[in-house]
Length: 289
Length: 290
Image: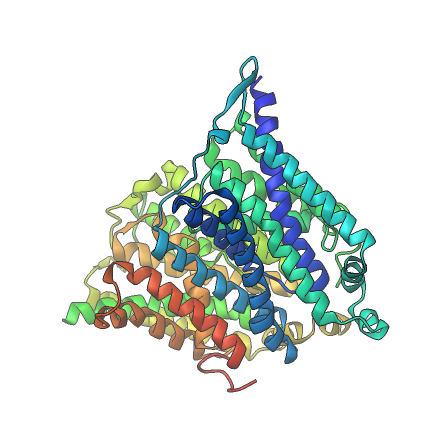
């Protein structure tokens, strides 16, 4: 029974990880920007939702504030930070450091405004109910799982059928060819940042209602997103998604044998094993540059 | 007053050494590690553990700390440095987060959350060195030795290979350089010296716990390197002095909330890192402009 319980929790966690990780993977795969501040986008979206909801304005305004904040933040970083740096042929190092600096600033501003302790939004939906003998599931977990799946399917549909979506996939295959073809890489990169940042919002909102938030949550989110992108194969959205579910399930099923503080060690072990056994990732093309 | 200055001197030397060792892999080998505090920490715990249980002789604690940190770095480097640079960033972030759990839980070696208490002062030929004014000399010597080692390394054949790798890995590989081996060796040297200074740090404070070796410390060391000037010899020292004087500078500015000094300090260097990358990627010491 415990195993079934942990599998269900793991699927919910995996769905939320998939949203954030796919957002990062989309940005990194198509624009080649190592967007370390993606974790900060998550923290910002979550705390915006928390602030609006806790002030008594309700769920929908909170959700809208979270979407607006996340998308504006992603676009602003792309426009004001990454673009000027890349104009001068910014190396991996320059982009990474600039992104990392932003992450530190956001984390500490959140700490100053909201305090450094755990906060969470309680809702009747987050109360667990007994669905089977000894298996408890909160309605919220089911909703989170379904919403995440819808978002991921919608993203897949968008990338396969729309003009912008095809452009994004082309950009990740060959940026030069996209330019030759006459597509505007700036527009595509803005689209990648807007969509990638918007994808974290449902994950951030559900996290604030289930396991809670603290200002340093961005690091954990970033570790999972990076690990899922690598294990799944850089540039492969389906690979990232599968890897995120593997991490969610592994973190929770590991509780059968280990104490909870070791769940991040499980992530590390899988990442490490994957780098050794399959450096190009589950569905990646090649580890060579 | 004398002790205050000596204490500041010790801290500046310790962090300068950490920044120099990180600068060596970041600025010359192009490896971006978010786990430098782990090597520092393993050195500190190894030094402290040996001093508590066996001997506090510098000729035992320092080499032991160096070996432990270097071996740990090999475990991280051998699989991850064969592949893309981003993989190492991810793996080092994972190692840093894992190490904090390990330092908290491995009670037999690290004393758990309470840490190692009452670590005896380091001894040199039987003389115990514990007063800040005498310990500062030890750390200055360690700093000079570290600067010397890296000066020689950077100007040797090995250093030229490293720069070639940093500028173009594929070109270096085409010239017959074994890129993964060279990178792995540089990380091991860097980790060994970070471990050494960890052992010194443990014996100086007589007390260490996990709080000195968390992600924040790794980030602080990285900020020192970047703000001072990556890939320069003076930069890491300048960065260490600037960032270590930040908290006292904030205390003088009365309009800032004093309870948030730590957060304000991090905001300043976080913003500093981003702005430098936009306007002066070379850091304070590095060549100006772009």
